[in-house]
Length: 346
Image 1 (tube, rainbow, N blue to C red):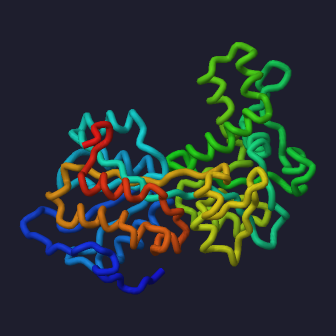
Image 2 (image 1 turned 90 degrees about the vertical axis):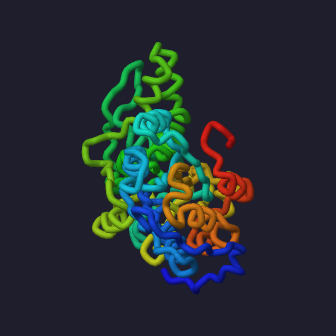
Image 3 (image 1 turned 180 degrees about the horizontal axis):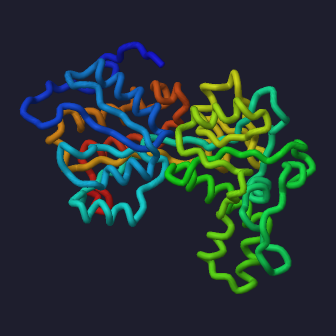
């Protein structure tokens, strides 16, 4: 995607001249495939408008990016990890063990997780969390015990669904989207069916019950996609009965080939996501090493540019691509300007 060159006056940001003498002159970023297109758009515009090289943006998934982020401090390590979920306590501990002790958490906006299929395929136009749980759970709790999921067709799950084989393409476990999918769709569906409460009533502890609810079947009905959304799109292109899990922005840029389903009666859109009406939405983040601020040329300028009104605001290029602008963006801008780190407020 190409964008007209953004001027400094339009961005209300002054481009600073790069200084010499550092071991690396490009900002280095890795992580979430959901955040990847947004980061790439910003990196391209940053390279065009500032006297710094275009940042290097790599994908690999939220977990992989955060693992790389936590390897240590210095020019041989990345500066920023993109994530479609918040950093976990264990990851913060891993960072600290390697000297990454001051981490800036930057929320860039919101995204929705959508359920899409071939535009000319079966009528997958309306889903509920309960249906997805029934279709993909590894086991169901029936008559006081867990039994393997025997459903093979969507119509067996619910007669209102197409009479075709269940064939779902979901994010692999290294993707932040997977965690959101498990918690907001599969676990929510388990609770709606009453299975979660039934397990508790049977003496199962809460953590075990949640784990059993969110365990996804591995018999080929559900396929983990470890690549990005383009791989999911290709799988659906080869399977007319396939249903894939995507970010809203990716779907909106592929409406010529995909149709999207409602979730619990709500259609995904920037409006329903920003209002909280659409049930499967999540904030998007990136994490910055404060120790690299002032050491890696252009890092602070890039971070400030990313969250500026002209870039991440409701009229900026990220919103045009599909990001739902954060209504508290000004607070993020202030935190970035002051280099506020997690857990300290300073």
